[in-house]
Length: 250
Image (cartoon, rainbow, N blue to C red; front, top):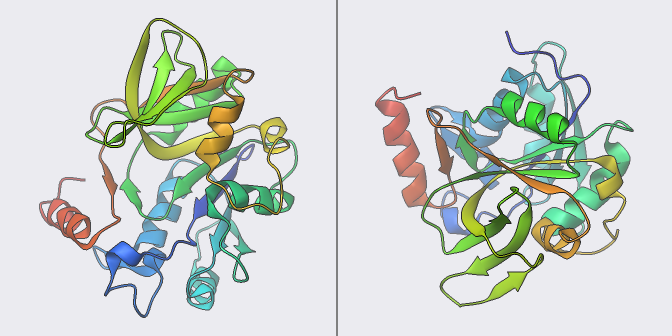
């Protein structure tokens, strides 16, 4: 039985346009595209809930009313879901967090995930590591093929970012020994870090992490082996997940 994480907020990003999932997203939001007969957003909520999260903020934009209607039907015992409505303007991940800040329960960190990530990653272990390390932010990573990689120092602190296709590199901390890892889309943010985010702006949260990496403890949590993780951002990737589920690999 997973501990009830009553001391943590949850936030699931469900506002994306889902253009890479067209034509499936021509008449519905990406968050409501189905895997194994249930919307991606249901799986994301169930993942958080299964690890004890009982308060979740979901942001909406594309076909917002469809998502809002779906959330009204969710009935998990003891779960409260609140909508952060970005119908007037899509704010990206950083802007979306800043906009939703007023909805979070005060003095509690925020566990963040994406509706288009299908995973059973051990969120309880990540939460435990975040608390033990007393980090400002914790980012879940894994070793996987990706042009964009985060760079961490020998202490597991965020040191930079690199795009191997374009050659662009951001150095946030000067350090000799570093390693690269791919971001999994799960992160935990302390309230004091949220206070650093500028409201009424459109920006990705990773920009804020890199801007503050030199002065904040932005730590890496490596997803342990034995768990599954899929990015369901394209039709091809959706088909891969369906084959995985069909083979009963969960």
